[in-house]
Length: 351
Image (cartoon, rainbow, N blue to C red; front, side, top):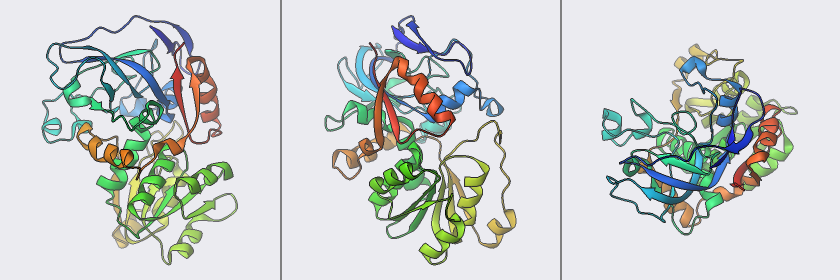
């Protein structure tokens, strides 16, 4: 198969032939039709996250936001057949641990992550293990490019906004960082009926945040975000989201909350923070703030999200601003390094 291969960290990906995957008894092999180019791919390419045990050993085929058509089905797979249009979460379970048995396969004790555990969607074909647990049928109403855009950033935001922070209608939600996952959080919270504020340093990203559903936007280069949010909301946000994972956005998200507010951490750190960010602990205690993390979403929660997409209540396609070929991934990575990319880019040309 043709794939964009990471042969060295921080060096351009090389488009070349790689071996086709084989199909295990509980697996499916998918012909990938679209794959979102995620900032998490960039982090792994940079060599980040070794401090939490996530390290890629070249040569590697990254890509974890993919969807496509089943080419082959293992003999033990019960729920799928060749030709099915499917999507898969990036955080996958093996099926037997306590988390998988309780419907939380994204928290599996022995997880599988495409691009890390096996070759991912920067290649034309992918084998997905434990398919009956980790694969979801993609409704005909959802296009393939749109389907690829939900595989990490969108579904992580959905799980965070809906399941973890439990955002409710008319609540104030402040989203710090308007990249792909931040825009997704804005769009989902707005669809629920929350009043959303988008915060970023880039006016182009803030314009897209308005399109995604933000009622207010703040350019933190021009306006101090904490006082601005407190003024807009009349005392602070009910929920604040750090969608970037740097010290400034994390601190601003916590500091803009009202009493008994909820902080949702979606962004993961870079080599600057290495997983450690100082917290205003006394304020967290004194204001009774709650802290939540969101890491992906189990396949069991996909139907609720896909129903909202199929019904038109959610439109992840709004966050997709461009598509690219295998060789175009390097340009997207370069833009991510300088925070220049706006919205999401989806790989959909494997020629």
